[in-house]
Length: 491
Image (tube, rainbow, N blue to C red):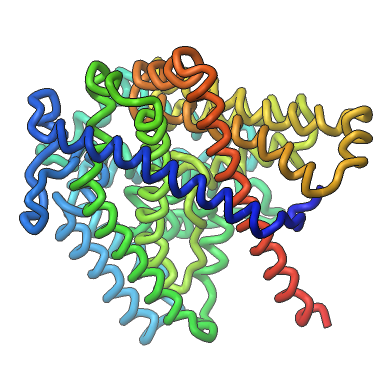
């Protein structure tokens, strides 16, 4: 049944009412738990004094968020503002050389922040993978790239390389592994795109211009080489109608999201609470489910905001960067383009899909750093992706497809939403493994599926079903609007 299937407005209103009440009720439980735990000794590292306007402490458990928007905010703003300023001057004076200016500014920023030795390590990885690209063999590019990635993720090679970088400051490890990891993935993208080029190979100068684009250097995302090279080489820098207005609107939305998240952290300690299982175990099933769900939503919001800030700068540079990620890793563009889509093709064959997901999560596991929790997370997510295809194939089984054909489109949408709700909670449980801990994930699973059965289990399933229907309705509206906008173009 199509995505444009419509449900009665009163039914959708009921779903919205149910979801709203559930969120308010669950949120009140998390708020009370946060208020009661504000001065708890077990949380002293995760809860610090916040904005004095609120007179409350703030959840500071996420180092990445605090680094970006509190601890090193001024340094990051200063560095990226310098890039924007130089890029603007260059685009107005010598637009044909703007990629060179991006590269030089990026190299100077890396040199100033991490030192000459680190810059030499980065250049050595570029040189190694460029040499491999000369062979124009895809399998060799994959092997060499993954070996280089393993050299910064596995001991003793990781410590050996990081030992060359002298000095000590809070961001050093983050910048070292972030810059090195993304450099290797960009070099792999360059090598793979070069191997598909029929005539000759791109120069190492093209690789350096691609790799040292500062907004993407340390924290990603991975924009594939072919897209970057095409966009940065164009000399036509005219913007579309309302493009600057859209950039300003997106920038303001991201600033608003940052402020909103910081305010949220003063009242809801969703990141710190899961660290004390004894305390969390005293929460109601509703509050516990809301806590698990809010951790996943926060990670999506954080990824969208961080991508949004970087993407806004890239759009100012007349680039069309990747959209916010669909998962918790910033590697998703590379993994989808060169692994998942390459092996899985149209993602309709069970065997190819299994091979594609195994390969994708093998690369992702190496990227995140192999350890027990990452292995478990990868296995469950790999199973989840394949399970979605198995369910789809199950519904395509002739007896069931005939039965579904006899149903109304609305009934079919309701039945599929029931399975979608179960799959949604599977995604939540899979990912809180990586976002929090294995123990917290086991506690949530036990409370919702075992001790909370049947009342909590079925009621939360129903509320999630209502939420899935609202999401599907949003997708239906967008599909209808897109169809309307496409009709004048076709005419």
